Length: 224
Image: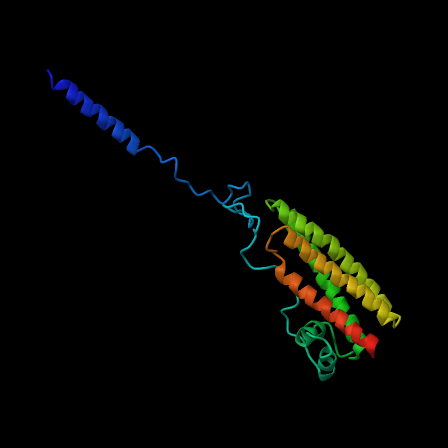
């Protein structure tokens, strides 16, 4: 009779130990699902860490034509050598030249400006799509809104630059192209302030390069 309380005590201890061993450890963390930040599971912006740097993975959007090979010429190469980016100058401009176009500083500059306007049009379409995509974080939407405003400015200033070149007024064209480059830099500033890696980073880099080429080409016309 005296042994029963001891046996009962052992039984209670065994039950408590077994219950505790199958209880989940509250101190451990379970990884969140891809949609745990309220983004749709298929959204490229879903992040288990809710990082403000998303989207940081995946390829950048690109222009539809810049990967195509162009047709260079000695005359075009000579003009493009007046810029700090002669290879890019030849690449972008040659895509929009044909045998009927006389290769001279004015036509090359006007063509380069028109190419950057086409780039801007595609950038507007891409930024609008990214801004309106379901699940896009607020900081991405804000950055794209800033860039959209500035892309519109670039398009308008480029048109005014072409009009000035038509009137053989390179100084006025230079002023408008300087404003276009400033707008592009404002877009970059907006992206930096929002702490994101832009899903348009390749497009933005190419557009910025061509805007600098444009300004260098027209500056050469002012000096000559």
